[in-house]
Image 1 (cartoon, rainbow, N blue to C red):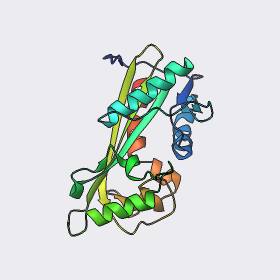
Image 2: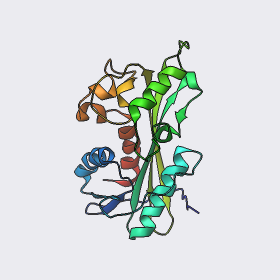
Image 3: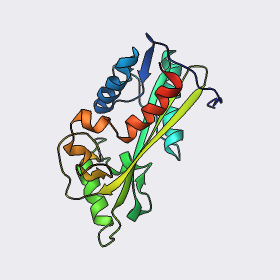
Image 4: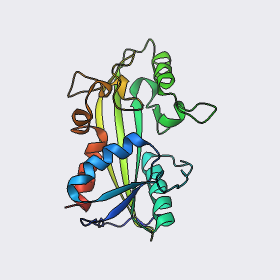
Length: 208
């Protein structure tokens, strides 16, 4: 069981950190964020680590279990991200099941089909509110875990717009912009998205 303490642990410059993801987009994005702090990120895919089943009932639980699995397998501190796309007209779905909505029978993910499903199931409902939420969990091999949430609110559009980002990015317009995440450059998106907000909380607690 994860040990959650009141005082977050810190990562000094020069630390090596395993990123518990096989998603190259997330790895690139988080490497950019950690680079100024002198922390080296190593992807779980680069180490040949298996992806644990995401059996948690919340973003926090899923992020923690992924981070702990990577930390215990490598003996290094590990970071995991769990994020979800929450649509008000669907009662918050796909939410914690966002990746599952895109899963194909062969194990690949088709987010275009998942976005079309959202538009289909929300058809006729004028409520276009949506939010991206992210939790970053930082874990150590001894079971200590710190979690840091971030959220961006906005609205969804269909058909999707833009070829950038990944996942549901092309159908989400944050409230602070007229562009979808898919239409933004990586720098524009990471300046104020849900993952960068979660990272800001992590940085304040664990870096620098």
